[in-house]
Length: 195
Image (cartoon, one colour):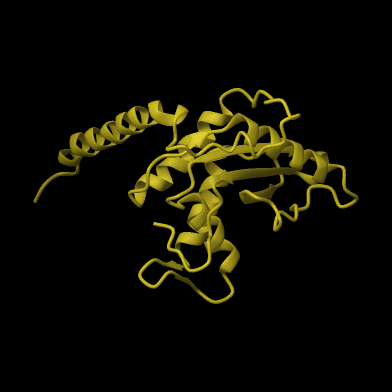
C-alpha cells in the first residue's frame, strides 16, 4: 500500500507542466489562426482596462476547464471585455437592475451570471462549468432534460472553435453584480460537438 505522500510529486509535476503548456500556448494569442474579432466589435469602443488581474483570472479559469477536455486555450480580447462591460453597465441602468441581458441576437457566444456580490472570476466560470458538465453527455452530444441553459454555459466555455474571450462586470449595488463573458467565434452551433 502506498502512502498519500507518494502522489504529491507526480501531481505537482503534472500541475506545473500544465501551467507551462498554457504559458507556451498563450504566446500564440497574437495570431489565433486568423481568428480575430477586432473587426466585429464596434470600432468606436475603446478597450477599457479591466479590474487589476481579473482578465488573467478569467482566462486561467476558462483555460483550466478547456485543458480538462483537451481543448486549446483561449486568448483574452480587450475589446470583447470592453463590450461585455458596456452591456453589463446597460443592464444596470434597466428598471430591473442586474437582470441577465438578452444576447440571443449577438454575434458572440456569451455566458452571464448574477451574484449577490462581485464574485471572483474562478467562482463564476466554475459555476458555468460545474453546472453544465454534470448534465452534458459528450458521447451523444446531449443534455439532460430541463438543463439546457446549464449545458450551453459549459459547452460555450469548452467550445473547441472558440479562440477569444472577454469579460466585464457591473456592480448593481443592493441588487448584486452582473458579469458577462463574450466569446469569438461563438460556440453552441447546432449539430456540432463542442470538443
